[in-house]
View 1: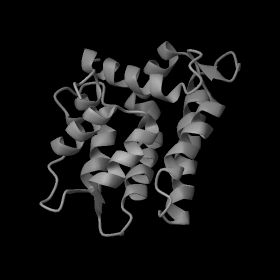
View 2 (view 1 turned 180 degrees about the vertical axis):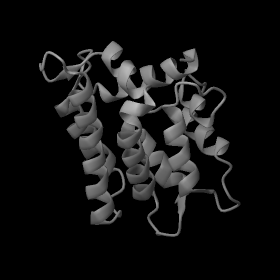
View 3 (view 1 turned 180 degrees about the horizontal axis):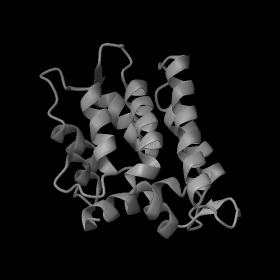
View 4 (view 1 turned 90 degrees about the vertical axis):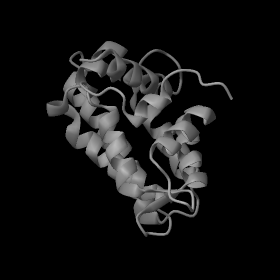
Length: 177
């Protein structure tokens, strides 16, 4: 497992721990899902529902795979053990990647505009300079849009335990504004 992968999931764990108690819990995922869905009010109902379902599956996979004592929460160490194990987490992350990129494709043409991408990534909690660096790493078109499938793949790669030097690495660290 690469150090870069651990740092990427450390960032996401911190963002998903909405209440900041050091554990992931079902309420964290519900709150995050609501924030993300609210960030794109013009998205269709089916895309919003798919996003909510994806957040719930993400949580469900974590709690099913990791919560041995059934206390309804997951620590960082438990989280890392699951999300960086493709055999345990690929299905959940695939659904999440599809739902998030679909939510951003407001026109249904296979592209996500920078403002929508920024709104979604800000709702998750990423810092604005990191968001723009990631968007630029996805090589936007002249009309400042990225291919939905490029973003989908980028999300999947983000959780790759053997990945380094990927666009998602732009989300790690404090970038100057």
